Image (cartoon, rainbow, N blue to C red; front, top):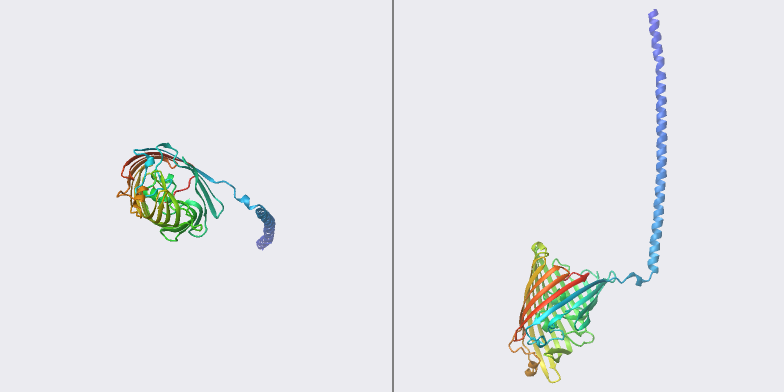
Length: 447
C-alpha cells in the first residue's frame, strides 16, 4: 500500500512540471519575434527614407537638366548666325618643280593638224617651278562644302578652282557651282600633280589646251545600283578654251556618265562616256609658231575612257597595276581668220592615248604611254589653213613616253621621264625630271 502511494506522488510531481518548461519556451519565442519585428520595421523605415532621397535627387537632376537645356536654347537663339561658322579651313600646299631638256627648240613646238591654246606648249628648257598650288577647303555647314585652289607658275598666279559643293542634298545627288575642272574624260577631273606622267596626253594638249575647266554649274547623280553608275551634266559661260565668248550666259554644256565595278577582290574597272558642245564660239585665239589666229563657229567633242586596276589581294601598298585609255573626237565648223587671211573651216580631229603603270615595290613605280592623233581639216583657203598648221600634210602626231618614279611616301615623289615626240615630222627627244611634294591635309583622289 505504501509503495503505491510513493509511485502516485512521483507521477503527480512529474506531470505538474511540464507547464513550467512550456511557458519558458513560449516567452523566449515571443521575445525573438518581437526582436525580428523591430529589425524589420527599422529596415523598412530606412528603405523608405532612401527611396525618398533618391526620388528627390532625380527630381533635382531633371530640374537642372531642363534649366541647362533652356539656357542652351536661349543662348543659341540669341547668338548671331555668323558666329556659328568659324574660319578654320584645311590647307594643302603642292610643291612642283622640274628640269626639262629638248633636242628641238621648245618655242618651235607645234602639233600637226591642231590649233594650240595659250598654255598648250612645252615647258621652258632648264629648271622651272612647274605648277605649284595651294588649296583651302572646308565644310561650310551640314549642307555645303567649299574649296579654292590657287596655281603658281612662271607666268604668275591664277585661280585654278573655286567652287561650292552640296553635302547630303539627296540620295546620290550632288550640285557643284563655281570654277572647276569639267567632268568629261577621266584625266581631266584630276589636278596635274596627280597625273601619272609629267605632261598632258597629246589629245588633251590639242583639244583642251592641256585641261578643260568650267565656270558654271555641275549636277551629278549616283544611281542606287549595285554597280557604280554615275550620270552628270554641266553648263558653263563658255569663256574657257576650247570655247570662247558666251551665249546669254551659257556658252557651253556637257553630259557624261561613268560605270564601274569590282572583279573579285583584286581587280576593278571603270568605263566613261562624255559629250561637250559649244555654239557661237567667238574669237577663240590659238597660236602657231608665234602667230595668232582666231576661230568663230560651233564645236563638239565626244569622249570615251576606260580604266582597269589590279592589286594582289586588294592591297595596292606594295604592288599594283593600272591600265588607262582615252579617246576623243572633235568636229568644228566655222571661220578661221587672222590679220592676213580669212577662210571657211571644217575640222575633224581625233586622238587617243593608252598608258600602263606598274608599282613593283612600296617605293618604286614605272610606266609607259603611247599617244596618236589624226585630223582631216578643210576649208576654202587651204594655203591659209596650212600657214597656221591646221593641215597635217599626211603626218599623224605620235609620242612614246617612259617614266620611273621614286615615292618614299604618299607626300613625296621624284619622277624621271623620257619622251620620243613626233608631234611634227621633226622628232624631238625630251627628258623631264620632276619633284612633287604635298604639305598639309590632302583629300583622296578619284578612282
